[in-house]
Amino acid sequence: MPTEEQIREALQVVEDPEIGISIMDLGLVYDTAIGEDGKVTVTMTLTTPFCPAGPMITSQVEAVVASLPGVEKVDVDITFSPPWDPRTMASDDVKAMLGMW
Image (cartoon, rainbow, N blue to C red; front, top):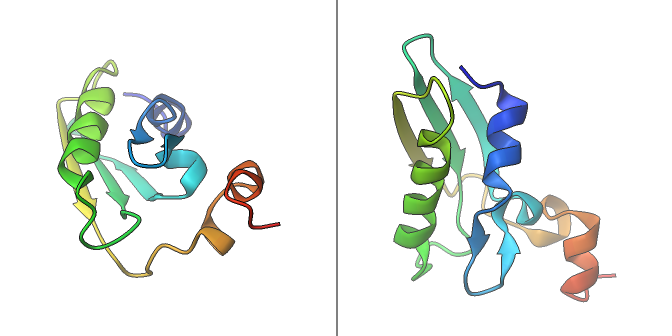
């Protein structure tokens, strides 16, 4: 099974297509849970509840995590609690790119 760090590193390639920035750098991934049965659950949010790219992003998350050795099943749990706030959740580089400094 991959480690949580390996999962998070693999997810670095998944971008929000509207912004063109990694979901990890945006702070959209809240948690990853690794089960002994080969199941990985990714708890994440989207930039808005009605994000039109949501299905594409979740499909990419599933595909990237499923490609890791030992992963048998991937569940993506979308939550809006807490709601995404780039001022507190995005990386410093993303804040600079979005003009938040």
